[in-house]
Amino acid sequence: MNTLLSIEKRNAVLLKMAVLLEQERQALIDINKVDLDSYTGDDISMFDRLKVDNAKVDEMIKAVTHLASQVDPVGVERFSFKHKNGMQVYNKTASFGTVLIIYESRPDVTVEAAGIAFKSGNKILLKGGKESLRSNLKIVELWHQALKEQDTSTDWVEYLQFNRTETQAFLEKPSQKVDLIVPRGGERLIDFVKEHATCPVIISGRGNNFVYVHKEADLNIALEVIMNGKSKISACNAVDKVLIDKNLSNKDEFVTNLISKLKASNIEVLGDESISKENGIEAITSDAIWYEEFLDYKILIGEIASNQDTIAMINKYSGGHSSSIITTNEAEAQLFMENVDTAAVYHNASTRFTDGGQLGLGGELAISTDKLHQRGPIGLQHLVTNKWYVHGNGQIR
Image (cartoon, rainbow, N blue to C red; front, side, top):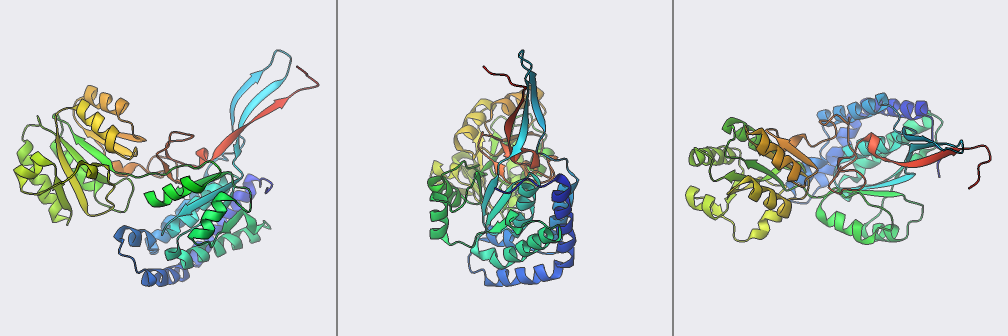
């Protein structure tokens, strides 16, 4: 196990990484271009996530710089107790030890997730996808350079160049101790990790997010929120399903307007039985589609009878990620927010804010749809476990 580095050393490595990313900006973009040119798949959202341009490098630099400015998440006192026998008891945060991050196509994860894991005192094992191998190896080379310049072991950041079979073997029988695994990617990746892992896994599950337009909705807000929800189709916080209250006044006019706006943005619009019949759009052939996360230029609109029905529908079909109610009625909003079982619930705002940076955490390792040990964006302060510190002077029980 690596000995915990001082916070000064961890911050110095992060700041050095920011300098190196700036120095090697063009080299990284050029190497990434080779990955992009070699990508033969037809998954548009994967291609989108694979790309590194100037804006993406700016984000990487910002992420590590911001991490360096944050307080140390390790050793934070969470509880203290003075035993009647004189012992002083504390519970403090502690790093996990070694964190394995398995992800697809996103070179920025090699910066941001590794940075969060490192800052919280963990050794990081990175297992990226083959489509981004060149970009990832370049970034890991920069991590190693930053570590070396601080006279620190390069073991803190390790890249696992494994194929699927080797990954499975490592998950089932790790060749080194792994304390936590965070898979970031599609359902197939997550199911694969859950099936084979022998240590705790934080599930960063599917999105499949819903917006409910309540009968007392401000229709301008509803339009803006839905359109914004489709502004980045590769994001797990994108909107896939819209439920419209059948008692909404001007419902027909609103739906017509919404559909034309979506189509103008090249988004394929599907409808349930009543919406498709009234608006001449393609009808769904099975209810199973309500479970699907699209990650595509595609949206499904349905009609619903009430807030209670909406809550039940979201709790049945959504991925447990994000959901939003558009209403001017505070009591209805509260009912929705308290009872919808998703990691983030919104009132009159876009689901696209479910993101560590947007919710004040700086950045995120993943967005957990699990309930243990942290739900929603996993920030720096969540990538820790805890430990009991008990100080005595000979007490026995």
